[in-house]
Length: 338
Image 1 (tube, rainbow, N blue to C red):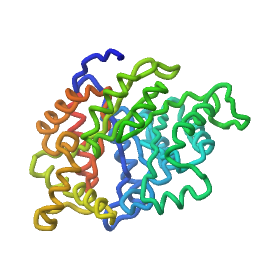
Image 2 (spheres, one colour; image 1 turned 45 degrees about the vertical axis):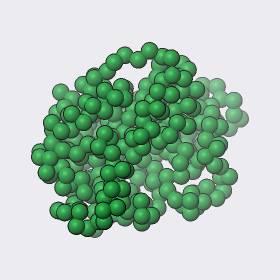
Image 3 (cartoon, rainbow, N blue to C red; image 1 turned 120 degrees about the horizontal axis):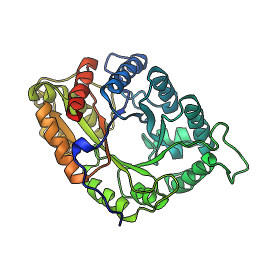
Image 4 (cartoon, rainbow, N blue to C red; image 1 turned 90 degrees about the vertical axis):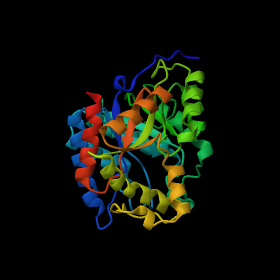
């Protein structure tokens, strides 16, 4: 087992996960403009990295062409790391991903992260539309990671070379919401990011497994784990609870199998949804990893979660309808870093 130094919340960097939400009544173009404003904002506030996630066939998430929007955000910022959180690798030919991220790293050297997931990133019909000529499945994920690492190596084994890509130092992260990627990241000595913000119950076991089984590699000497957290911060608890109803509506729409654009907040969500649906919200948005409130409430929640996980970094998602409220939420979080 690798020894792990005790870390307080103030000891670790904080990052941002942007799902590029498309608001009800809005367009992806407006979403991308908002993402640029948010990225520039959090860069000034001192956040460490800015990640975007691959989703498909989701009317409320615009980051489907992840590497393209990454390049746009990188061009509009100066130093914050830009990454995929993540690319769903079974959806793609590994050579294409190596070339795309080799291009990004060549354009924005030292700023690009490549987070990899093995889920479809959507429903099975969409997975079929994405993969119909790839003949790949989630079971092939470890082999694909090997291929990708080979494309980035100085002397690839493959006869096919990634240009650009070969010889570039692009940090690879494995993303997960179960123990599969924890095991693989430990075995390969890679960075690991756990989706605590929607799989809170598995967080501690997955992190423990990763740390216990970690094997040092050329890219990473000791385990490095990042955890996801939903944070909806406002100047009062009451306002935070109000604007958090957009996130709650989004989770319910996904559970119903009817994903929709990000909805405006509701004054009384209890009057709109059934008791069973409200209970589902509580189960999906666990208060340990979905922290809603004013500055003090958010501080306590993040400190408690850090004490429990001993994460090396936290990545924060904030599905908030109004951009100004979203910017303010990250401002409040940044004040806790000082």
